[in-house]
Image (tube, rainbow, N blue to C red):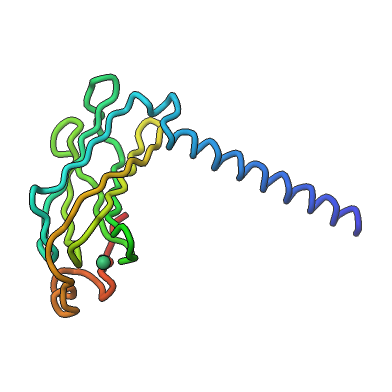
Length: 158
Ligand SMILES: [Cu+2]
């Protein structure tokens, strides 16, 4: 019985170490490790972003100067100093290396787009700041726009 317990503890420690290694590797890649350093990701918001409007955003991805096709692109839109839950979109490739999606922001202010790209076993997340105009939407307006009262989207597909 005691031996079993010892084995369980050893097993648990090994699992934890493996998990830690895994996340460290993830961090390395996210910080521009050799796999993603040559991947160029850019994010474009409309010239004027207004709260309450459904607007289109685009992400351009290149690697070694070539467009990256068929990547998994997920964009989380978050306010710089406030939590509105999950908002953003799953990018759809509209032409080689160019991914687009739509979103409604619940209020004006400083926003950050976290662009997560997965392709060929490589994953990277890049961060872009942008501003939105306008006041906070009313709860009824949010509902109509497909948002919950905190500004998160009702049926996220990501
Ligand atoms: Cu806010």
